[in-house]
Length: 190
Image (cartoon, rainbow, N blue to C red; front, side, top):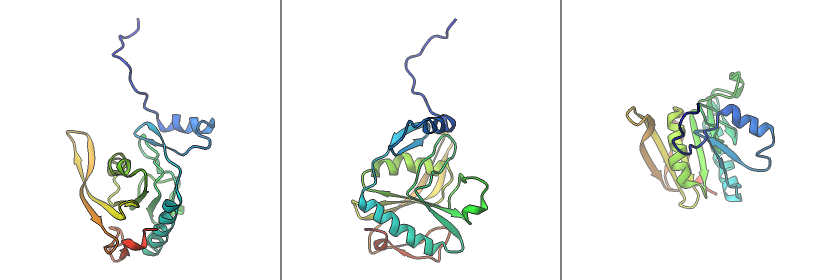
């Protein structure tokens, strides 16, 4: 006998199912990300986002030289998610890892049309993954949102960032992993 239905339930995709769909060509020509078991279609990158990602990547490569490696648009698999952050900084070199690591020294999302998503869903996702330093470069507002200080809320079963700093073009930011490096926010913007 079938168990009584309690109404419709969303299907949460596993990483294995997500990879199988990709292997079958289901996402051909579409940018998608798996976030907490939900597949999101992401907007096409516009030129300002490409320029800002490239500029920020260049500045981070200089800042992390000898300390870490900057990856651009590389999937970041962990738990039931595989976001594709604009920039992710690894501790050490990529060749130090046997497989794509589920950790990062810093994650940067460059946002023009996804700001609310980056500040909510992605912020919670990266906090839960233990990313200590998460930046959202807001192209429309021309500011850098810097999220830090992880705090676990056992009652809700989530991890969040306790602090948010909003830096303007005249401000300077230093990555937590290389506090001696100083990046001008204006140098990250297109």
